[in-house]
Image (cartoon, rainbow, N blue to C red):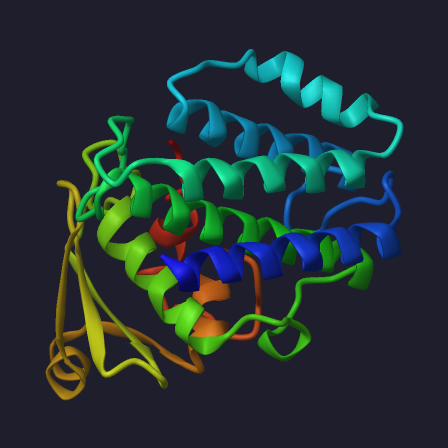
Length: 248
């Protein structure tokens, strides 16, 4: 959990830095039709929603987002929510009872540390894209490869295997995901049913895959989250993947 909380703090710092440099009303290339102000409202709401879940409370989602957008200093509002989130995770008992909405998830306290680590990291990349005026590349970011490897695993085994996942294909496709810094690869079997994802030896994954996505872990992480054009999935996997937007 320490790795996730450390990466969460790093992401909040990066988010605030890039948002300040970009300006609140600048568009976000990686989130079409969003501005930095709206991005902050969304992220700060998610932090407060996660905090409420850990504390057995609830929030009004739309009202919370509006409050963030209208705050006298939205960036400070973002930081404040993140501080409360870290405190809620740190203070929660190991056996805290709260929702967990991903497959292959750790216990709730660790789940929320991990989920908010990657939620915030990806949205901090969105703030970076606003500052740059383009999709970022891995070298533009602060992200540690170990964090990226963990984020790839959460996305593939946690999100994409759920019944509500939109990663589907009428024609079965097998995608091999290989991050340079990861000891294993991920084999993603896409069909009309929910995806099946297995970890395997890198050579075996590469051999069994119809198409492959490979490269530095941070580049793979950002590509899978549709946050970078540094790498790309080959056809026929490209369109099914891009259509598989994440839903809670």
